[in-house]
Structures are given as structure tokens and as C-alpha cells.
Length: 554
Picture (cartoon, one colour):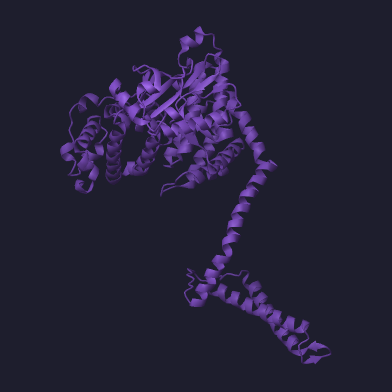
């Protein structure tokens, strides 16, 4: 393999060298040293390797991503949602990732806002605080006051962050290609596909316009729930790189001192927060995918405020159906049906063994579901299921992996507020409702309606398909390719049966039509042909009875 084939390497040689050096420094590029590709051997150094050797792999991995910067930090944050791929230990470690992106200067912030919104700062804002209240890997947040007096917060994307991310994504794609070539273990996880998914997710997060639309969607869903507050957005003061929204008055559920000082009933807040997320999952089938304590606020009027809608999860009809059937199978400890649904939604490796997976799932169901509901820990259950998924090298859809992460984080956040709170107890009413819904006439009529449209499309296109088929048959271009083994007997009997039936039917029609010559009003020709057809049919039935089968018995 020649590096000259990769334009991204030519364009970003220095950055590529830097990435390889950091990965090697933390002992994360052993496949390079082991396989010793000629084009990379000069990049590998052992500087500081000895001082880091004693650290656990998970910690070294997190430190390396932090040193590599924004793109890799975001990669780590997204990987933290995929415990099914990387394991619960590494996923937990990656949740500690914090951005070290430098804060943009007032001049950079001003240039970004004015170029995006097409007006000067003085025309847009009555007041603007250039000291950010928070800074993340992609952007930073400032408080401001609009000309009409509305107090808002403004998310401003870091200067040139998109170009830097694009360069890193290109290098990541190259590294994924190389790792699939030189690391057989890693290739099983399809790193190229994962990087493609990561790139798509990251570029969505770079588009603040998408986050604005997500907030509008969730606002509509919780319009009739007075306990939930989604910040009001200002589309006229927003763009792809700038997002302006209402400033909420409250504090994060992570701030225990403020919760106590304000006399907040933490038990009620825990129950309210979990039910809000369960409504998203089971009722709306779209959920806020980053429920860490900093994004869940307690407002002055005891409502729950939700922030940061850059990452959301969706549950499509196929996944919803599979989840419902999994819950039903789990309640009955039916490992066969549970396994079927796991296989239905996951991507399977070449060496997949269904019987081994079913055995592990059977043990899992009986181990956990034989215990009282109150004693179950949902984090432990989901992490065990992730372990089974990893053991069999299955790849779950991102929607399900996000959902698992959300449920685990919900349990952690709720127990931070109320040690006795059980997410299992909160989920139980939803599962019962789900079971009832599966048997409802409304669900049946909905499925029937979907089937109607499928059949309507089929019947609409059928005449054209038949016409095309007939045209091919007339022109002699119609071919049927068959692969068979020992089908001669079957084909012979099929032809014999068709001919016998046709002869018998033809004779019967001649009899019923009194085709001459006649004897006592009965068609002689019809009677003869019918008799011949009957004899042929008798012979065929006798042959079938003797062989016991329509297939060749050899």
C-alpha cells in the first residue's frame, strides 16, 4: 500500500504524523509495530512509552483522545454510547472526556456571528457578554439580551472548527482502512463503517440548524406537559453555526448544594425526569440522547428543563417491533423468541453461532428475571446484555445502543437524586401498556392500512410487469435459470399430472357439451377421453402411494 494513494495524507502529513506519534506514545498503535508496514515504521517512536505503560488501557485511551483534540474527543464521546462494541469499562472511562478546546476571542466570536446572521452585533443585541458561560468541543455559549429585552443564550461555533474536523475525519478514515488491513481483531468491528457513521453523526452536530429543528420537534411533543420546558428558539437569530435560544432560570441536577438550598423535592424530580424520558422512548419513539446531569435542569417553578439537542435517538418501526417482542419474550423467559429478535436487529459476523447465542441468552434471562423486580439493577442487566452482544461480535443499530446508554444514564442520574428510585418500577407500566397495545384493534387497523398500500402498489405495477414478461416470452428473450438436485422424478410426475388433468378436464367438457357422435345422449368421444384421463390419474396416484412422496426417494 502506498501513501501516495491517499490524498488526505498528502494534504495533512504533519497532522497524520502527530496522530500516529500520540497513538504510539500511549501504546494504542501496537498493530503498526507488530505488522511493521514500511510506510509507517519511521513514524513510530517510543518516547514516553515506558512512563505510560503501567496505566490501564482504558485510561491511556482516554488520555490519547484528549491529547488528539476535538474530533477524537467527539469520537470518544460517541463511542461511550457503544458499550456493546467497546465494553462497559471503556465506555464508562470515555464519559469522563472533557474538551480542552481553547475559548475563542471576542473578535472571533463577533466575526462568526456577524458573518452568519448578516447584521452587526449592535443591531442584533442590546447586550452581549463575551465571557462564555461554557465551552465545549464544537462551540461556546454566551449570555445576551436581544433588542426587545429577551434574555437569551447564544451558542457560537468555534472558528475554523469545521475545517479541522474535516481534516481529522479524513485521517481517521485512512487509519480505519489501515487497521482493517493489519489488525484482524479490530477488523471484526468494521472500523471503516463505524467511522462513516461517526462522521455522519458529527457533521449533523456541526449543523446548529438541525439542533434548532430538533428543539422545535420536542417542544411540540411536550406542548401539553406543563412539567417539561424546552427552551424557546429564535430562528431569525440562528444559522448553521449560531444558535440563539431562551435563557432558562435554574440549575443542573448535578448541583446538590443548590438542590438542598432551594428545598427541591429530589424524589419527585427523579420520578418526573425518568418519566419524561420514558415518554420519549415508548410514546414518541424519539429521545434526547445525552441525559447527563448537566443537560437536565431544575427550574425555578419546579419544572424540568432539557438542554443540548445536538444528539437525538430515533426508534423506527422495525426496532420498535423488535423491542416489544423482546420484552414479551423476556417476561416469559422465552430465549428462542428473544434470540430471534436480537438476530433480527443486529448485523451478524461470518462465524455466527445461533445456538451459542441462544444458550447465553437463556442463562441471562433465567439469572436476572428469576429475581424480584425491586432487587434488579437495570445498569447491570443492560451491561450484561452488552457483554453477550460483544462476545458474539454482533453489531447493534445505533438507535438501540443509544437507548441502552440513555437508560443506564437515567438510572445513574435518578439515583443521584433518590437512592431508592428504581427505573425498573418506572418502566413496568410502559411495558404493560405496550403489551395491551399489541392486541388493540387500532394497532391491527394500522397494520392493515400499511398492508393495503403495499398491495395497492403491487396491483398497480402488476399489469406493467405482466406485459413486460409476455413481451420477453414473445421475443424469445425470457430465460428461467434453475438449480436442482435429483429433480427428474419430480418434474416427470409434475408433467404427467398436468397432462392427465388436462385430458380428464377436456373429456369432461366434451361430455357436458354433448359433442357428437352420441350414444343415448352421451358423447362417445368425451367418454373415451375422460376414461383415458381417469386411468392416467389413477396410475399417477398409484405411483405416489407406492413411493410415499412426490420427491425422488433415492
